[in-house]
Structure formats: C-alpha cells, structure tokens
Amino acid sequence: MSANSDPKACAEFQAQLPELLGSGLDLANHPHLSGCPLCQALLSDLETIAEAARQLLAPVAEPPDQLWEQIESALREQESGTAE
Amino acid sequence: MATTEFPDDPPPATPDRSEPALAAAVPAESVSAPGTDEVLLRAQGGDHHAFAELYARHKRRIFSLCLRMVGNSAEAEDLTQEAFLQLHRKIATFRGDSAFSTWLHRLTINVVLMQLRRKGLQLISLDEVMDPGGPEDGPGRTFGAADLTLSGTIDRLTLEHAVADLPTGYRLIFLLHDVEGYEHNEIATMLDCSVGNSKSQLHKARLRLREILRRPAAEEAQP
Figure 1 (cartoon, each protein chain N blue to C red):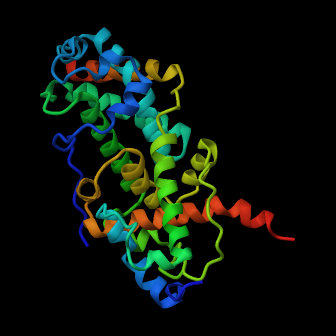
Figure 2: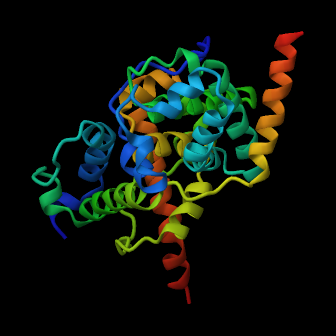
C-alpha cells in the first residue's frame, strides 16, 4: 500500500470529495488518488452508484387504474365547488 | 432558522433533462416542442378529454417520481392525485417557457416537498435532521475501511431497495440529483438550503448507499 493510503491523507481527500464531485471536476489525475487504492475504490463505487441511478431508475411504476377515476371525481367536486 | 415557503408555482424553466427518460416511457408526441402540442392547448382551454390524455401520457413518470420520493404506494397515489389536481388548476398559466414535462415535473416535486414538510421534514437544517445521529453516526468517512469494492453490476431491484432504505432527506437529494438530473444550485433553491449543503447531503447519500449495497457481500463473508 502506498504512503498515500494513510488515514490522515485519506481523511483530507475525503473531506474535499463532496465539493470535488459536486463541481464536476475530473478526479482521475488527483495526486492523492494515484497512490491510494482505498480512495480509488471509494470513488469508483460512488461513480458506479451515480451511473446506476441514471441508467436504472427510470420511471417504471404504473399507478392503479382507479386513480384516474379518483382524480376525475375530485375535479368534479372542485368544479362544482367553484360553480356554487 | 425560519423556513421559506416553497413557491406555489413551479420554478422558472430550466433545460429539460427529464426528456430522455420520458421519451422511453410515453409516446413520442408528448415530447414535442413546447407550446406546439395540440392536446396541451386543448387542455389549457378546459377540454376534459385532452386533460385525460395528458394524464395518460404523464401518469407513469409522475407516479414513479412520487413513489420514489416517499417510498409508499398509497402516499404516492395521493401525491399523484394532488399533482394532477394542481395541474388542472394551473394549466392555463403554463406559457411554454420550458417543456411541459419539465414544468409538470417541478410542480410535482413542489407538491411532494410540501407534503414532506407537513410531515415534519425540516428541509432547512438538512445536516441536523437528515443526519439523525450526527456526524459520528452518519455514513462517515471510509478511510481505513476494508476494501470491498462494488462489483459494478448493480441491478435495478437491488438499487431500488437500497434507495428506499435511505433516510428521507438523503433519498430526496439523491433522487433529485442522480436520477432526475437537477443541478446543485437548482436543488438548493427547491429545498431552500445552500449549494454546499446539497453537495454534502448527496455525498452522504451515496456513501450510505454504498454501505447498504456492500452489506450482503460483507455478511456473506462472515464465517
């Protein structure tokens, strides 16, 4: 394991991670990462999770058929309420 | 800290990142250029059948969004209903500055956020409320942790269960950013928090997900 994988260096890098990731910077050449397998693994996992979310969590759930009937009924109530 | 009311109307137009997912879920005509959709125009004019058509086109996406955000089917139905009732009341105010789907999407998010706030989620103090046990109890930093890397083959069901296991606040920001594609500045506006807070909460959400997703592998490794 490289000298980079010491808890202090990792703590420092990981404390900066939210900002680094949130800024959309390319971290491939970050000096800490090149010698730290732990933080490389962490970053790889976080990227995998974000990518999986983008690809896998498209809308898939179908509302029950009766929901439209409920909405129609509520709309009728709404309209009759405003008409009175 | 005082909370600020969420705007009653959806925020101003932003680029429509929801379109690719929408395109896969509904007929192509619903992603036509804003302002040119005849069904939309008829619905704006009070045509009930046109409104029913809009519901048919968007119900899946809106219901899925609600379901993911609250993690409960009955509540998601109520929220979907409320979103479409609000849509009915406000549809005439849609001016076509953004894609209709984006506008409806943000209207729905506002409906969900208002509901979550009514239930006591204080979206202002994200760090305090969304990190119930404080920093020591959160996902925490991972330096020194055993090297158990995710395989890179996460399946949808596993990820959905993991997301459902997230605390509400984490789930909210993760869905808004990583699934719905909002930028941190947009999330900060929607949730009335700082951009830094949004970044921090998203990071914690991903860390928590990593923890959840690695759990089965770690448990199997036990003698």
